[in-house]
Length: 137
Length: 76
Ligand SMILES: [Zn+2]
Image 1: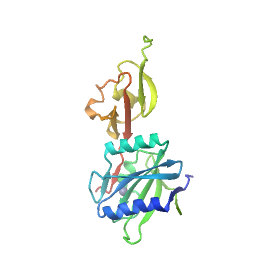
Image 2 (image 1 turned 90 degrees about the vertical axis):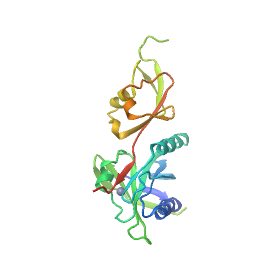
Image 3 (image 1 turned 45 degrees about the horizontal axis):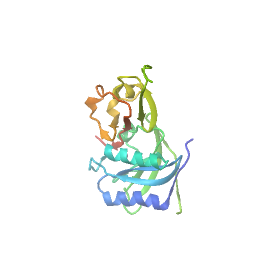
């Protein structure tokens, strides 16, 4: 059983605000921390600029990874938004999930006034929902 | 000093490693079971084109970083 992913209200809001601002495009980003506890959100550009796909710029990924190394943090999460669909990974999301140790967070804007975030582990094509705990700051 | 054949000291994703003379980017990825199409590679902060992976030999002091693409989507 994977540990429940933990983040603060303000960190969840960074992702939700980015998703709402990016709507109808998908947005994405990386999460640094330790284990299952988030400490820093890194919004990144979606170079696909698409409503139905996302891809990060490797240059930006490298820069974030360097920052994480310097700050002794790990890459613990990768997030993106689903502007029109549920917060569950698509077939393509699953196929392109190359980080078995990371949590995959999806922000659904299906209900624009009630965004939903869910967290998953995706290992060798197998998806398991881990649960998400949003703590007060 | 030298002569061992494993004296090319580099850093890979921040970790020190000693490589055999003539080790390429492709060799390093293969040794880790990483398919080249899944990763982006930088050497000393410079993004390397995929076509160069088989020919680019790491030299002493090089810092190679690689990471898997982060992407997804609702493709039909
Ligand atoms: Zn998706």
